[in-house]
Length: 270
Image 1 (cartoon, rainbow, N blue to C red):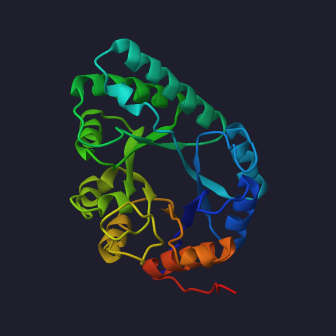
Image 2: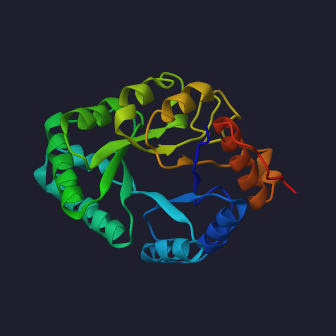
């Protein structure tokens, strides 16, 4: 049985290059999808985020999803309605910008940090308004697994909408003390985005799949049970890989994901 698996990668992969150089290289290596971060580029060249999707279109790359910034995200859980509403408005503005640019999925963190305590009813109030806006403009919001996943899980459980889903980050899930694939199994029916990478179990390394301790047989088997459109990676070079050219690193990443999916590998590093 033939499978038409699509593979994507985050547009920033650890090398100082302009956005257009990165996108051109990603296309040349053979990726199908790319992921973006919703902030203006400031280095090495400035570029408005509203121009990002035009670059993708020029190089005929599909947009998998856009990651929203995590700055002040904890304000969505504040007991102060003024603080909450201020950040809700910021998120709504970004949702509309993304939709205008042609995005149909954005990724959000529910919270930022660790060892904190938040008011559940405040979070519910905030995310309900955010998802209502997503429904109004026909965009989906994927809540990513991070530390303190109980807050993200609360939102996924309590807010019923076709416009809310789950984004699974494998590196986040295979750090000591996290679920090692169990939350993916638990929330696979809401899976609409993935950030696939590896680590050593100690830190969020975002290595190329196969370079660390992530149980890829388990993860890929579960993801194949879903309707995910792209096996998208969020990867950065380790110390040894920093010796590689950017294109060589991308080829290595692409080859690794093809191997995990059981596909024929044809690309070479040189």
